[in-house]
Image 1: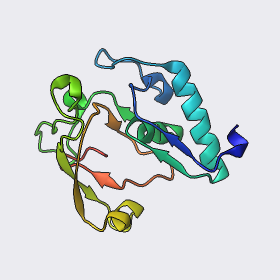
Image 2: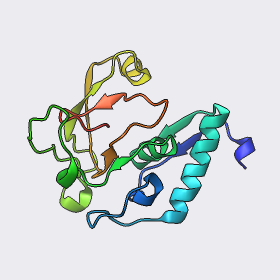
Image 3: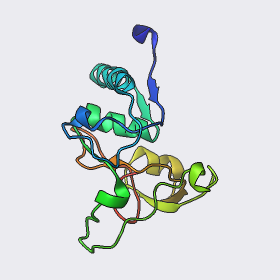
Image 4: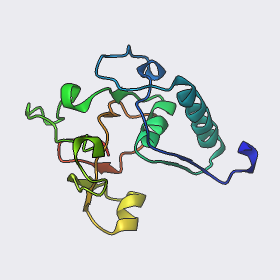
Length: 156
């Protein structure tokens, strides 16, 4: 079916297996699905190699990053260090409905990178977002650019 696709979308969902980016699984990692990781990583690598459009939503953005050789912070609340070195704790990014938040809860703003497609499409420097993740980009994958960043430096 891959040959018939015009693009792929990788949706959100559960955590990625840290083994996919060369790390051991820490106790803070949630539920994993290694077969899903294998399929999504393969599809993403093929699509990028073929110049096919790829859209990653939440976990999907993390899959794209790992497919390009990047890594993830396994748990923002316990492992994130702000790039400014302030030592301040991260914002709350795990605003899940299971924690009492509405799916539409706008958790924090994100700064949109000048010159990014996202910035040009939304025509704003900053937009509010919901936030339902506890993992994020640690090392950026090859050839990727960050388009949105939370005030604490977490890649959105």
